Amino acid sequence: MAKKVKLPEHIKKKYERIESKRLENVKSKHRFYLIVCEGEKTEPNYFESLKDDLPKGVLNVCDFKIVGTGNNTISLVKRAMKLRDQWQMQIEKPIDKLWIVFDKDSFSDYSFNSAIQTCMAKNPDVDCAWTNEAFELWYLLHFHYYNTGISRERYQKLIENNFKEKGLKNYTYKKNSKEMYSLLKTYTNREFAIKNAVKLKKIYVGEQNYSKQNPCTMVYKLVAELFGLERIIEEEKEH
Image 1 (cartoon, rainbow, N blue to C red):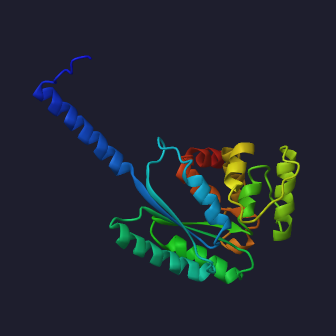
Image 2: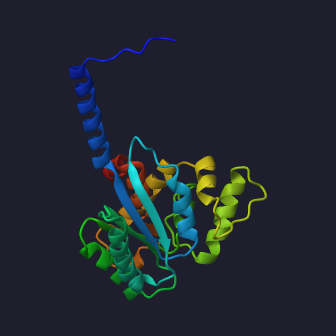
Image 3: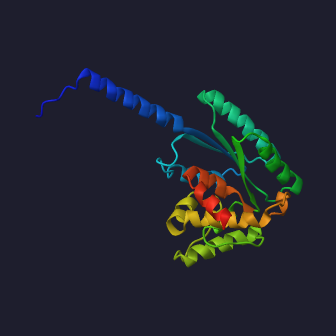
């Protein structure tokens, strides 16, 4: 057995200082995310599946909490703020970023616009990943660029057809599926979806009535932030 070498005290203390500094830097990069979703299953299932796939070298996540509420768009924002305060008291440290996820669905134009404007009026630590009309638009943008309004009834068929074109001949879309993130990761490209979403958003530059921005989704902003892909957004904006 090799004899253990004992380091001189001054060298030992130097390594201890270096390690202490390293741990301090790592700790400073830790971020706590709270994602509050309007839906109780579809959106939470997607983000729960995404959670374990975050690249540690890009984003160090100290904790990552997803909550599905079932609230409508107006009460959802108020509920999200309360949840943030509750979690901050429970973990005894600030939540670095609160994301609120909701769809236009059948909510009134006023309710939808008010929810977005309320989020925008808060500080930069609050943002909303809204979609007009439904969250499934984010799935579809992984396959193709869609720039015409899509009814909720058509989402399922389009998703099924796209996966069948990828080789899943017997695929049937289930709204609350826990496998959607994994399927999209396997058969599509996340960066392609972000580019399509940015391109779509550019159509509505200057339009302040968010209820009229159909189709459109801000989910790409949340996904890009989590995976450290903001550069793709900036590059696509310049095109």
